[in-house]
Length: 210
Image 1 (tube, rainbow, N blue to C red):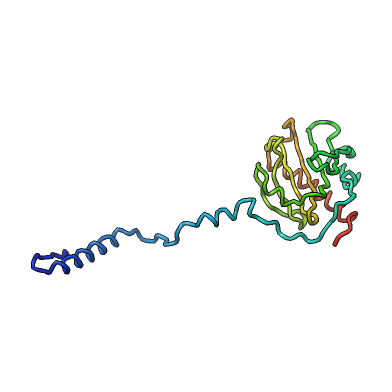
Image 2 (cartoon, rainbow, N blue to C red; image 1 turned 30 degrees about the horizontal axis):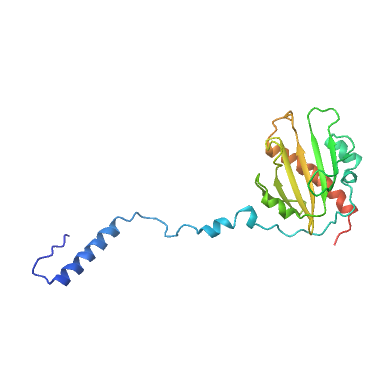
């Protein structure tokens, strides 16, 4: 039905009826099933960025003071990974942390693992990695997964395990020649995780826990 407003109505009533008609017509243009929820504020988006995230609690503290990472892979573990006994790789980071490197003696594929006992920096520092970071768990311990800014992310993966307050077990896998079958970042992280589980199991036996 069309509402006709005549000139015999007072001016104020004409204005009121016209406004009512416009509101009614505008309501007819609203599409059905549209959510009334507004866009999320910027603050909620910012809270999901790595710098705003926190690591979940660790099951216990495994201190790294005095730990030589080369002692954290047994002969059986080395055979499982297909590597030679580790060689000392101290000072591989800016904190001069104790480190160890294991490599495939055949050189094919070009498998390399490096573990660092970082006693002067917590794993949460890795959340600020310029190459991106993901939080996961390895045998119950929080781990930050990322990659070194000096390595091809498609050929490498770096894990930072939160083993104690202010201390980190860092485990990196890299296949620089790209000769591991179907190598990509996901497979590199599988390789790093496999070694990290072995290292962590032996650290549980060696390190005093709290």
